[in-house]
Image (cartoon, rainbow, N blue to C red; front, side, top):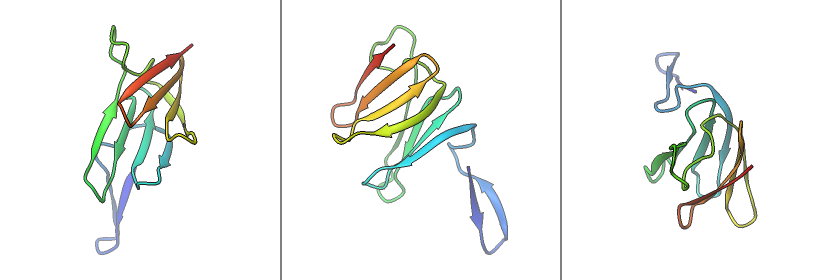
Length: 102
C-alpha cells in the first residue's frame, strides 16, 4: 500500500502495510483492516492511532489458524471473519477472542 504526496508528486510505502495485500476493509469506527499473504492481519485507525496485528502463533489457540489471509468479512455483531489457506478464523474485537474453524 502506498500514500500519494501531492506536493512532491510521488508515492511512499505505508508502514506496516508494505506487504502483499489480499483484502482490505474499513469498519464503522474507521479502522482499516488489511489481510496479507503470509503476514496475518494488520489494523490501523488514523483518528485514534490504535494499531495492531493478528498472527498465527504455533501452539496458541487464541491466534489465527494461518497467516495466509485471503479475505475478510464483518458480520452483524461486528465480528471479523478471516478466510485463510487453512480455514476460517473469527475475531471478536470486543473481547479479543479468536475462534478457528476447519
